[in-house]
Length: 186
Image (cartoon, rainbow, N blue to C red; front, top):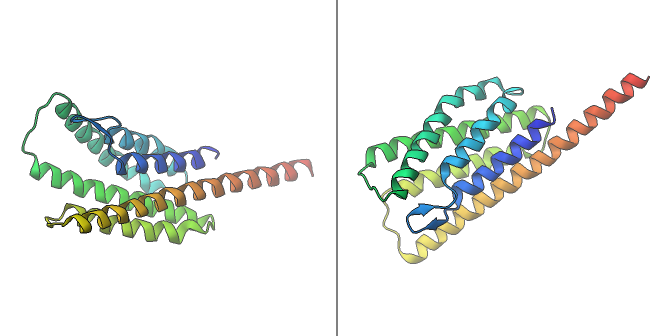
């Protein structure tokens, strides 16, 4: 029971990794496959509350593999035309995040946590932002800065919401433990 709040916190960190890309030359210092690995490692814990999240396991493995291979190829300076693959894996990623955040929002709602609605709103905003970011749009400098700022705001807000939700879940676990102890002693 105590593992679920930690899992939510790990997911928040994975979104931090996915949004920020720190590169040293062509090599990402914190590659995206690490974020997907972190998500993968939380799925069993989340499945205690939402069994359908286990359907995301194979999808997460595919994304780990794709991101790892892309990272290794870029580390060795190998550039290949992967436009179809990129679009395919972006679509898979979009689905994974949409479904994962839906599962978290559903759990939050069942636990009567106030963040359920906010998680859904940020899920939708993130999905819209991610979709727009891959469209072939010619941005001027001002438009690009505004677009990146909006993405940053959505990401930070999502991370903050997930951390707040994680904290509320920790309080819920403590409250349940206190009730269990009180029931045992009476």
